[in-house]
Image (cartoon, rainbow, N blue to C red):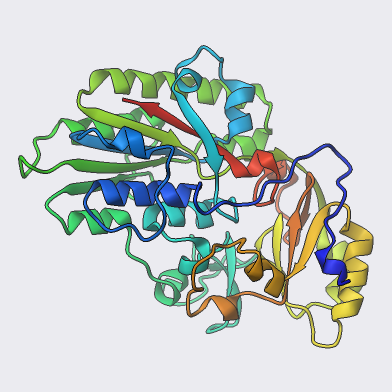
Amino acid sequence: MNQCTQIPKTSKEIKITLPDYKNSNCNLSNSILKNFGIKPLNDTLSLIDPYLEKDYKNVVLLLLDGMGKTIIENHLKEEGAFRTHLAGIYKSVFLPTTVAATTSIRSGLMPIEHSWFGWECYYPSIDKNVVVFTNKIQGIDTQAAPYNVAETVNPYESIIDKINKTENEAYEVASYYDKEVTSIEKLCEKVKTICSKPLKNNNAKRFIYAYFEDPDHALHLNGCKSERVTNILTNIEKVVENLTKELNDTLFIITADHGHIDTDIVMLQDYPKIMNTLVRLPSLEPRALNLFVKEGLEEIFEEEFNKEFGDKFLLLTMKEVLEKGLFGTKTPHKNAKGMLGNYMAIATSNLTIITINFVDEFFVSMHGGLTEDEMLIPLIIFD
């Protein structure tokens, strides 16, 4: 039996959760497409479909980065606005990380279809690991190319653009688009302004996708049970609840891209026997490593990796990853194969393997693995 197929026994009581591409944030976007009269690209989400049956003037999807199921349970009161409006718990796509999940939400595509797999992706056309959102070379403050590599290699059409091609209207509100969106208060003001405008077509309706970077940023810095995160989330809850009370004929959908888990960290370079088997540094995420292993050294790599991390990480060949449909169940993007190595190591514990020596405090908590804390996300509805 191939060592890679063995499920590791975690040292802590941590539950493993596999993606479900009929019950994920990718499916949420397809429900929205269907509601706006556009043929879905994948299955719709049964949790949200009944709420969309009413013909609202405005549909607002607010994504709060990192606000997983356990995060709201740790930080928000059971009788508070978010938890009393909880419609259900569902799953992130794999990887449960911002690049893969928000791209699935913005596109309606599974990660295997859009190939924006993780924070750092390998692009064979330039033979570099690239930080997808910044377009910089892994570990170096240098642009990877004179063009945006991810957008050039793996372009996709957003659901916002699709909706705007119909008689309806769609908007995106986020700090990466608008420098004035510096707080949750500013974001909600923008959403309110858009929702209050008269529609250009009286028979039309409006969709708004709003993204906010907390609690993810605070979680990375402070951890999953910190008072700082409680204060930030409590304020977000209050500001968003007030917004929902100020607008009529508006469906508010509040969700997350992924959850978080407090983590222990090791540096891969401290394991030279493993490093010597690799063609290049791993890509994707520290909790989901995309590994290019040198031809002829596969057995040595498997033996060394499982000896060091076999109880903390699930080691799979990339063939197994694709057969199990972890990235999705549809036909892979034409450029996906070259981006993916011959192995993946996926965290099933709280251990994280880094290759770039960032400031340690940045890694108090992380995401990208297959634990429940990372994979399960809330669907919150104000209607």
